[in-house]
Each structure stands twice: as structure tokens, then as C-alpha cells.
Image 1: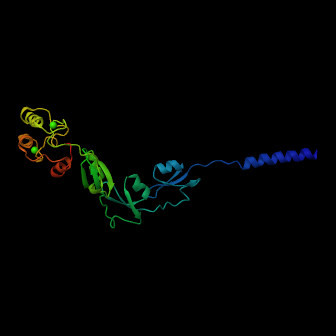
Image 2 (image 1 turned 120 degrees about the vertical axis):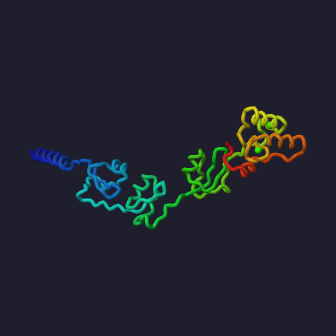
Image 3 (image 1 turned 90 degrees about the horizontal axis):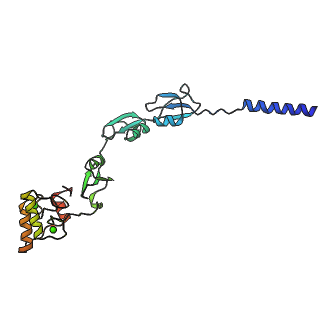
Length: 236
Ligand SMILES: [Ca+2]
Ligand SMILES: [Ca+2]
């Protein structure tokens, strides 16, 4: 009898324990948004998706103080924005200038570097956005062409028909191109046909080739020399 009574008490105690200690997961709370405003009842991930700082499960705006540090932010267009959090600044593609900074004391400089243009020519001191607008590949901030290899300089000035040799056929090809609207020099319109590297294709290039092939005249320049004379890109 007493045994049964003790068992019942134990069972009731256990039920009471389970009932009063039931853990209810609270997975929402307050979120401090950029600009230090506060919103309630959001999950941690919802808060982060708005660049906010989650204040913990069960927290609410009545009891938290949103005082995320703020500072100046250099935006991608090089303008400056004051009083934003680092998270907000980064969400805008900007570069945060540090807690407590302000636009009066920072200069939003333009990072530049080397750019490999189509045709593998290299150009210095350009921005990443400019390089991309030209179809180039930006080499990262602070790089320069002296330390970059953009690939193969694959034009042979004077070899206008692209057959691997410089001979009378190239002079004929150029005359056909200049006077009879024949096909353009191969593979690059100007560079391949520009035997005398004056950065244009005309009858002078045919004459230059004839002079080189038959009269011992000077040879056409090589690809890197043409590029340094006429400038990038190679495919122009
Ligand atoms: Ca040829
Ligand atoms: Ca020329």
C-alpha cells in the first residue's frame, strides 16, 4: 500500500516536473538594423538578411538598446556616406572606414591596378569597373603591367593573310583589302596588316612588304613592338 502510494507520488512528481520544465524554443528576438532602429519578432537569419545585429532569442526592442558602432563608408562610386554600420556599408559594396570615422576626415580614393585587355594587351592604373567595361580582366588593386603577363601576343605584323610566312602573298592580300574590299587582315584587322607599324592599314603596308621581300628592306616589327607603338588593344 505504502509502496503503491510512493509510486503514485513519484509518477505525479515526474509528470509535474515534465509539465513545468517543458522547454519551449524561442527562436525569435529583437534585431538592431543599420541606423540603430529596432524590430521585434524576427529570427536571427531574418535579422542578418537585413544587415541587422540579432539581439538573442527572446529579446525585444523594449529592453535592448541599438547602438551599433557607425562610421563613414566609401561607396563604389567613390562618394562617402556617414553614420552607417560596417555591415550596411559592405552590403552596399562599400569600404567601411572604421568606427567613429566621418566623411570629413576620409578620402574615398579610387583603387586602380593593371588590366589585361582582350588581345592580352596590358594597361596600368585603371579601375576594376573600367577594365571590365572594356572586356578586360582586372588584375587586382595595386598591380602593374611590369609584373603581369596577360598571355600571348599573337599577332604578326605584315603577315596579313595569316598563313605563317611574310611574303608577296601578304602584299597582294593587302592590296585586295585596301582597294577591292577584300577580307581583313588575319587575325587582327590592324595589327596583322600593319607591316610598317604606323597603326593604320593602307597601300604603304603592301609597299613595305614588297620592299622587305624583294629589296632587302627592313622587316616588319614584332607583336610587342607593335603594341607599344600603337597601344592596346591588340584586337582593333
Ligand atoms: Ca603571310
Ligand atoms: Ca601601316
